[in-house]
Amino acid sequence: MNTLELKSAYEAAYHKSATAIYFAPGRVNLIGEHTDYNGGFVFPCALSFGTYLLVAPNDEQKINFRSLNVEAVYSLELSQLTTPLPDKAWANYPIGVFAQFIKRGVVIEQGYDILFWGNVPAGAGLSSSAAMEVVTAYALNELLGTGFDRTELAKIGQKAEHEYAGVMCGIMDQFASSHGKQDHAIYLNCDTLAFDLVPVKLEGIKVVVSNTHSPHHLDSGAYNDRVRQCRLAVEQLAALRPIKYLAELSQADFEQVEHAITDEVAHRRARHVVGEVQRTKDAVEALQQGDIEQFGVLMNQSHISLRDDYEVTGPELDALAEAAWKVEGVLGSRMTGGGFGGCTVSLVREEAIPTFIEQVGKEYTEKTGLKADFYIAEIGNGAHRVE
Ligand code: GLA
Image 1 (cartoon, rainbow, N blue to C red):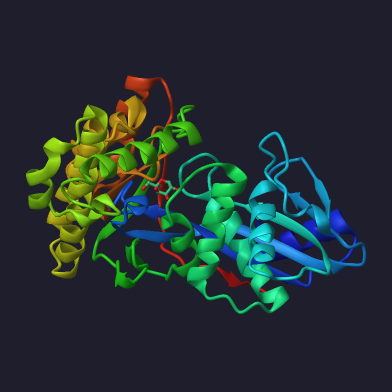
Image 2: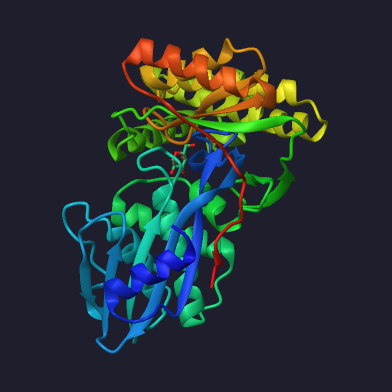
């Protein structure tokens, strides 16, 4: 939908015009997976698709939430913004953001009529929920004149996810949605939140996102289990090395102390995290030196570690990655995001893209009975006002 269509959809829903339109993007992570809540590095970029929010004030002292993607409509009194709705209501994402503003001492005295529309493929692990949280935070920050910076808006989105969706996620998705920059990836230290924007304009190479359309998604249970297993590893290391996060250990440090992690599962999770942090640093260095081949090799290693040690890939993501590795002109391919279902990200030479889509699509369907979808990613900007 373009802006004009969105505006008339708003008029049809609320019988008045929107006074502002905001946008926040989804993201694709190039490397650095399941490192964010372990204090490590990530390397995501914002996509050109995301979530739009149209808004106008009302005189009702109510916040009305509608979405063009889902039917359920919610209308809340200003006093109801600090309690999650039951039954996994979609409006918990924006309500969770309102609640975070209120927690920060912001007084909301005005009602608003809000309409969302998102074009991030649903359930694809490309952070449609982060886009909804960040667009809400960005809009509220402007409407209420609260003056939070982009990092604070990302933290607000992350807390909304923890408290209103029950996923104990790291900061990567909301940070990318908030800070993204066209044709750049964000090299983020998730401990300090210091970051560099690294240009990703690759001569003759495209970032291809392949969607498994798999019915298995990383539910909050499997995700939160990984978070707990990493904490257990930190606890078991405490006697030898008192650290806050696994990412504080270099590969060499880890080899000296890993025997202290007696829980076999936690040990493998920790091995992934330490290796992935190193791979992310190496990958960014390779990219900066123009060694895109090496970047691709590290992407493949990342997938293998996520498959064998972190166990978040599953047959569909493995089928897509393994099919991609065989295609000439593919520099690297790996799962991206939380895992299980969702997408892979691949670096593919432009001339190889038609063969890539054909061969990977065919092999994927043969192995899984499902049909994959392919998008050439455009790296877009972070949250902003459209109009
Ligand atoms: C999900 C979470 C992120 C991050 C990734 C895995 O997308 O929301 O915080 O942990 O999984 O890297």
